[in-house]
Length: 244
Image (tube, helix red, strand yellow):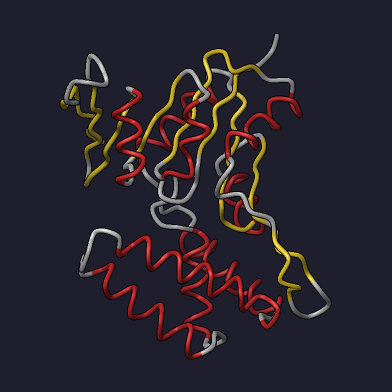
């Protein structure tokens, strides 16, 4: 019998932060990043934390990712691996309750579960194994002898194509399928499954979820709120809460 698929984003969906972002923080603490990059990201990080404007987080992420990507040919692999170890040792259990419970429920029901993340494969693989995913996809950085080459794959967009690759690879079906994500980069995979869940969505994903009638779940403190509406034209209202 063909198994059903359930796909989860990791950063901001299962993990309460971003694996990629946490590696950047560790590299920053280790003092291996150039001053101009740390100065730029520190300022943008301050703007995000103080909610200076609505796109502050997106600006911080964009500068952080672009800066680290451009620095790759000067980043020692040993420093990166130390940062990865620190993140996994300290942060791997910093997870959301709603999505973790949903993941476990679907696994118990026999779903083939897949993690698709824009973070590096070196982080995604051990994190996914910890939570018993059947397969996973993460960004890969090409390695030289001591430093990265700067060549990389991109997995934070085009997740609908990556999902379809998993269907073919493991002979899975979209019937009864699930996808869970928190940002606009997840919208492609949410659009092609039977049960899309926009979890703590960004503004862009929220607009698409409202327009398409996707389930919206908000987790705050010790309660998760599920928002429902009769149609995409009607306001979504609090349907029920799930305390834990």
